[in-house]
Image (cartoon, rainbow, N blue to C red):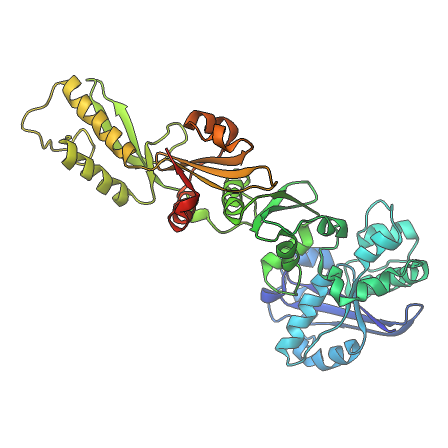
Length: 444
């Protein structure tokens, strides 16, 4: 078996928008170096200052170097019919494959990651970065952060791994069906093996233990594996591979509960790589307060943490239309509802009379907002899942072990459910599901 041990220097962290500044390829048979190739590359974009400082490769050094397209044929020939090896292989492979594709060459090599292999074959070391490994194992490592020096050090590390691989971890990892070669280099494969094939929410963590991504799935294991099952060149994929070091999960009884929990957790944790659903937070609410004269007043305003609205709306227009309906139905005052500065009343009612109108309007609005429990299968056979909507707002969800007793009253139900923050996204999910499956609804 022949290996092509590759190291590259680049202008950035993901292939879709960055170039290669240097490449080195060591052809290796598992015992010794058979061939060595190294070249600076003109990335045809400016090298950022901090990368110049890290690698020592400057714009002036690459201005007369060949472009990747000019050396693509030679690079492709060197990699053909060999196992592509690198320290954090998905990073190097994604760049090389992308730039070879752009030059008209196809690359579909088997891959080996020396980070993952070293963790398996030489466990218990104090860190598995290339610098830490070479220091601990006594491997010569000159010209760090340059392609040639790092590739030669990685080749020596590969030879040591091959020699120590008494359990056959290399051939196991080369079996494409395992998918292990696609996993982030610092993510234990056991984390994937422990994932269940059921609905739920999963969490990706970085080295500091911080949640960096939250996702939901009908099949947790299948969905998580799909994140790492290809060589996408976009920034999010490469950041996942670089940062993910741990995965955990929470099982849910249904896909709907997983969807709700994902939305709630995204808003609780605001993980750096979750970019969806940010526009679903309700922006406006109907607020009720008393003025100095004792009149109960209504206002549609932007939501704020200090006060809880009677109801929330995506737009101020939606809220004002609802308020105008209350004004028409109950004879409320435009000025006291903050719709206009002009009063639409011929003569103002006394405080007690007006406030009774306002309270009737609120009761009517609440009465027209549904209160129901959405009951479905549980995780265990002896329980039911339950999602509660109270006066049109999502309240929370949980599991019932005594359905008949716990569904007798709203108070009983609220005691066993976990309250979660309401938002329009979750509310619409539940209302749509209730409309599609009315047989699951218990009305109050």
